[in-house]
Length: 213
Image 1 (cartoon, helix red, strand yellow):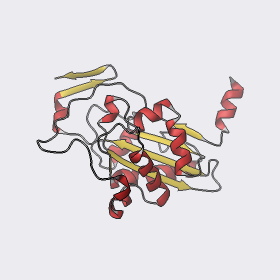
Image 2: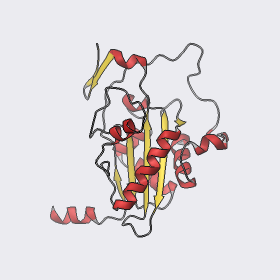
Image 3: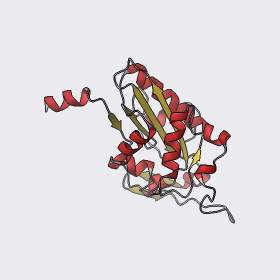
Image 4: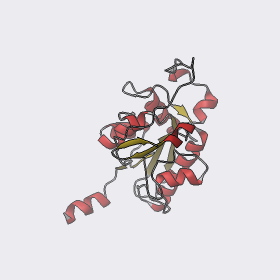
């Protein structure tokens, strides 16, 4: 056991996933006449919108890989500049500390987004909760880290929206930071989540499911 822990601490490439949940989310009502799926190809996303995905090219490349993946279960996934900023700051914080985890800086991922003004649904867990963030270190390219994320059950279910709870998360922001002197060198952070809506006031959600009030 001690040998395993030592190997984990000194591994060049590491991942950290959000807490998996099969919570059934509240049923959100799409406005009448709105499309059920985005028709435009990710390859034709305008430059200014791509910039909302991440603050540098590596982050933008990973965001597009996630959006374009043929296994993506969400009907739409839009870049959000506030999430991109939060992800960039998280990747940089991990690089400065030389660690990859959800609690760099003493905040859980959910609380980190609330602190910067992104309004999560009220039933998303509090101070140390995470239903929104995936992080990794030690992967040189967007293609490499995306392959690693997809090979991890917890990451894949979140990033590809495989569970009903995650499928309603339609905003994405990605961060990347490079620091040669830091143990993992390359650091990645991905936020996929959604903002609170009026319907959320009518439901309370736990790990076992959602209960109408």
